[in-house]
Every structure is written in C-alpha cells, then in structure tokens.
Image (cartoon, rainbow, N blue to C red):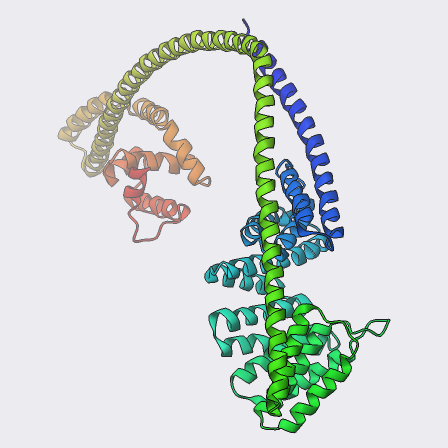
Length: 568
C-alpha cells in the first residue's frame, strides 16, 4: 500500500465532508439570519400590541441567531433590536446576555470595517453599552454599570456629537441617583450641556440636561438658579408642538410646569407660584393626559390648594391621587404578571421543542448507525494500514540512520587519526627544517671566519702561509655544497609554509616573496643573525627588511612583530 495514495484518499474524503458541511451551514445560517431580521422588524412594528406577543417573536429571533455562524455585522443590528426590546420590557438579565453577545461580535469584527461602517457600528455599540449599564444598574451591580457607562463616553469622546452629550448626561444621572455624588453628577451634566448648546442649540436633549442641572441646584438649595432653568424648560415645552398643534411631549410640559411652580414656593414667592400653576392649567385645558402624567399634575394641584389653605379641595385632590396611584400600580402588576406568564409559556415551549428535536435526532442516529459503523470500520482499516506502513518505514529509516551514524563515527575516527599523523609529520618536518636552517647558518658563519683568516694571511705569504692556504682549500672543498643545500632549504621552507603564505597573502596582499620567507623564518623562531645568514644579508639589512615588513602590516612600534607572526 502506497502512503501517498492513502494520504490523497483521506484528504479527498475530508475535503468532501468539509465542503458539504460548510455549504449546508452557510445556507442554513443565511436563511436563519434573514428570518431573524424579519422577526426583529415584526416585533418593532407590533410595539403597540400586547407585550407577550412581541416577547414570543423576540424569543424566536434569539433562537435563530444562535444557529447563525458568521455575519457578525448583521447580527449586531439584530442583537441591538433584541436588547432594546428586553430593556423596555425590564428583562435585565436578558438585556445583559444579549448586550454582551453584541459586544463580543463588535470586538471580533471592528478591524474588518470600512470607516463608514465603523461609524455606524460605533453608534450601535454605544447604545448597547448604555443598555448594559442600565441593566446592571437595575440589578444593583453598580461597578459593572459604571464600567459600561464610562465605556460609552470613551467610545464617543473623539466627536462633539449628540451621542457624546447623551453619554455624559446619562452617566451624570447614574452618579446622581445611585452613587449620590451630586458634585460629580453636576460636572458631567455641565459638560453635556456645553457641548449640546454650542453644537446643537435647538436639540431636544438640551431641555433634558437643563432639567437635570436644575434638579441638582434644587437639592443644593440653589433655588434661584433652578427656577431659571425650569422656566426655560417650561417655555420650551409650551412651544414644542407637532404639525397638528398638539404638544409633542405633554409629560415633560407638566413636569417642567410643576417644578417651576415648586421653586417659586421654595423662594417664598407664593403668588408667582400660584400664577405659574394657573398658566399650566390653562395650557392643559382639553389635553388628554396619560395616567402617570395626570398623577403628577394632580400632585401639583394638591400643592396649589395647600398653599392657599384650601384644605377641602386639597383633600379631594389627594383622594384622586390615591385612586389613580392604585390604578397605575394595578396596571403595572398586571403587565408584569402577563409578561411572566408569557416567559413561562415560552420556556415550556422551548423544553417541548427541545424534547421533540432530541427524539428526532435519536431516530436519525439509529437509522444512520449501520452506515456510520461501516464507515468507521473502513476508516479504521485505512488508518491501521497507514500506521503499519509508517511503522515499517520508520523502522527501516531508523536502521539506516544507525548505519549512517556508525559509518560517520568510523570516518570521523579515521579523519582524526590522519589529522594527528599529519600534524606529527608537520611538526617533525618543522623541526628538521629548523635544524637544517641552523646548520646552514653555522656554515655561513664559518665562511665568514674563513674569509677573515684569508684576509689576514694575504699580507704575509710565507711557507707557513702556503700550508694554511692548503688547509683552507680542503675545508672549502668540504663546504662547497652550501649553495645546493641553501636552495634545498628554501624549497622545503616554501613547501612547509604554503598554507601560511596563503593566509599572509589574504591579510597582507602587498608582501613580496622575500618578505613571505622572512615571516616564515621568524615563525621558525630563529635568531636574527641566523635569519640574516640564511637570506645572505647583513644584520642592518635584516633590520631594514623587518621595518618594511612591519610598515606593510600596519603594525605600531609597541606591537611585537614576532608575536604577531607566531599567532597567525
């Protein structure tokens, strides 16, 4: 069995399974995401209907999103809508779960976005941070709430936008309501107010920020400053109407009017406070008020009668307030009960659906067991054959490696032995050459002495002189082979120093052949006089030659020439 054939077969099977799986997953994911997007739109369009129906739709949307792999940017949009729904339904745990998933997708995909896409997604994730902060705040997990409120500020701090102002304002509300840090809250309100007033002077947010600042001033007993801000808001909401002439935000109008009246009372200006309520009552004549707004208006009216000591009227209004409060609380309890019932029903439906899916999955598993078993057996045989082949191949490879290792060790031992023999021969020849050089040097010294003797006897030729010349001639005959020996020495010197010459030429390419031989003679550790004799020059000439050599080698006077050559 050929290993490459086995590998090709396994790779082909793997690719077929992967391609089939990816194709199905992509198709299923695309359809599931499209359906989730449609459900999210449907849930938004049903915002005026019973909350339970929308909750059922949102639950289906989340189930579909869990089936989708990829499509991060589109999924963030759907999670945005889902988290927003859970936020208004006051399902804080579900808000956190959905928001954290949207945050995870944002961190995963933000590097792949174009600048335009990144800006859109930044606004989406900024609101997600707000929802997370609000959910943690309602669960009294204040550190986590502060963390996400600050993250929302940070993600928007590079732009002087409404989103930036809103994030500052909301963090101020959190600091005021939950942390009870009035000064810090006021600081964030004022930052938000400055940015909005400079860049968006007609924006609705400006009134909300004014209201928050005024509330802080009122708690700090700065009633005059609070009164001025409430007056601005009252005038703003009095003129804030839609095309049909109806008030756009009657709730804020009532709140601003009531607060404006209250600060007059706190300043001791009772008559102006009474006139303010009367102006508000005139504005609201014939305007239908939602229960919560009517409750606030009645509380202001009760105060209005109390300030005039009309206790009967005030008591009558107080009874209306109690009835309306009970009605609002009952409606809230009923709404909460229905929401919980729907949640329980959805949970039960999910369990039933899961059981049904599990039953079908078991049936499919039983049907496919035989096929899977044959596939496993086939794959096991293929893998076993591959492993056997690999095992045999590995054994042979290990054997070859061991043989190669033994052969390499033998060759290494032979090489080491030869190198030792070669080094021994070189050292022996070097010693012979040194001895030969010393003998030649001594012969030349003898010739010099002979020359001096002849010079002395030339002046007085006597019978004794003739006898001396005869002796000298005999001695000269014995040493007549000097030139041949000198030539042989130089040849042996060059042969032994071949690699040394190559190294010198590489380092100092300007050296002559005579200078190379001088370096070699120095390397043999001969005395200067012996070197001079071997080169057939005088000692002063040798000194001159050494000076030129030192100069070509760029050596300073403090450097020992002999030591440099010995170390090469």
